[in-house]
Amino acid sequence: MRVSFVMLGLRDHRTGGYDFNTRVADALESRGHTVDRVHHGTIPPRARGGRIAGSWEVLRRVVAFRPDILVVARSYTFMVPLGILLVFWRLPVLYLVHHLEWMDSPLKPSRARQALVKWLVGRGDMIWCNSRATLSGLSGMGLSPAKLRVIPPGFARFDVKRSEERFHGKPVLLCVGALTARKGQETVLRACAMLGGRDFHLVLAGSGAEEPGYARRVAEAAESPALRGKVSVRGHLDKEEVYRLMGEADVLVHAAPWEAYGIALAEAMWAGLPVVASRGGAVPELVTPGDQGFLYDPGDARGLSEKMILLLDNEELRVRMGAAARLRAEELYTWDRTCEEFVSLVEETACGQVRRNVPCGPGVATPDR
Image 1 (cartoon, rainbow, N blue to C red):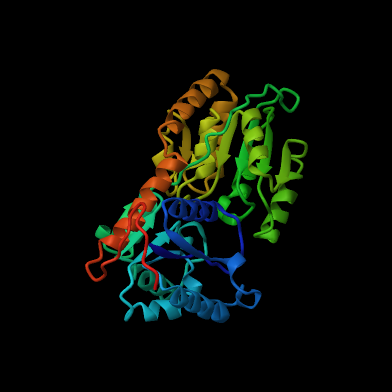
Image 2 (spheres, rainbow, N blue to C red):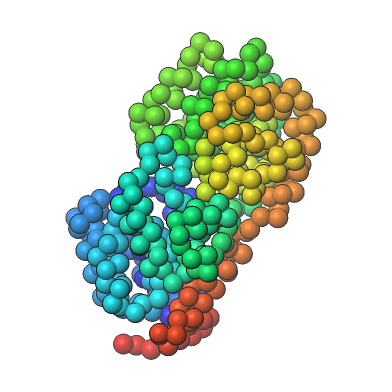
């Protein structure tokens, strides 16, 4: 089976969604399918970052490839010409929605923007989403629940190396995520400033490249009189370094006001860390409050501070919740399970369309054209 996989954005950010797309595309190829990946690395430089040039490049690539199914990961900006063609081209389409960007942003899109997203995503014969929270958002837009399918992302089961090294013996709070408003590090810092004279050290791990202005504000707040010497801003780190930090930490603090899934949460729980996180989005699907950690209302720095105090003041509670977090993480999807179910969804979408008689499935070769 021939699969056109469009995963193009205005910028080439290596996010969790990008990692998901790469893994499932690899899985499709391992299953014997031919995949044409349309992303920043495979299109001409003139088409990168420009909506018009990029849109026509997507159209050209898909038409030239003559796929049996089109898989689209967001790429709203570049899908309008192809979306119009799909009104007439009877091609099975699987749309991927990692998150609805207005759910975790204070800037609400216009009605025209939401209508465009609904129209493009609605072109899908099936729509993949990563959590029940994302599914709920899509259903709220009026998309048919019969089209929606939840397959959670997996996460790497890394070797956990617990370290007794501490910042002068202080409990370590870890916050992982790009330094952006949608990840909420300023809320974390405001909450930490309310911890009084308690000993702790906060480590912020994440790139500041996406929102440099926000990253500067975070760095300045970390040097405020109330927090000076208590916060380390590490910037972008590779996965192995993040895993090492998880082995040194005592608590994961996650302040995103809305999270479509939360791979960093799953990884931290695998490392045996109790979690303090906003209850927005899919977080309650991973964390049961009072069991693997605590949840608080999005943006409530005082509530976050109160939850952190419960764990900072009680080592036995940290250990108990950390053990429960590890048990919960062992129940979550592995990448193997995610890829297996996703490949089956692609095959189901292609084979299930009565309007096309497409040979598909493991080991089925598509005839030369």
